[in-house]
Image (cartoon, rainbow, N blue to C red; front, side, top):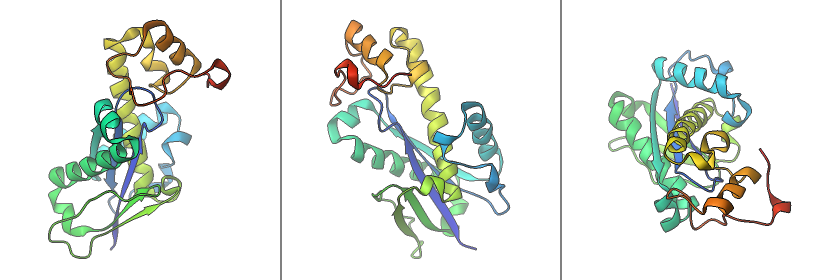
Length: 204
């Protein structure tokens, strides 16, 4: 049976915090009907599905690239780096899956630099909208989103004035007003355009 490992990221668009990625390979018989693109899945259900994935016998890994890495190498390269770290975490935590994974599918246009030592049949490809088409990518999407949201809630405790727990660092009107009032926090992405004219604000 061909096993496909899905790869997806969460947090390319925010002005603050890390970008997260997850890798997921689903066991035979996994109820794929519970999966969907994380952006279309309500938060409560995302948490329930993420918990189920972790307890279902699936192989998974999570990785991230920090806001400083994003500033240093750009958001695209940081997203691919997070995917590479997520895949490495999967192989480290679930080594028995390595010879069974035939293919990895990354959501989007770009392919992360990943291999499986000793698995000559392993192939990697990118697929636009894979998070709505490939079950294992949907699972990775949900894991990446829930893990990043949890990290932004933690950062909200460190920097409560910015409201990270509400907007998760995305460029909402309220977020940009806080940046204007307090200046950038230590976890803002300084390579991003943090302030724009109010007519371009996206409200919560």
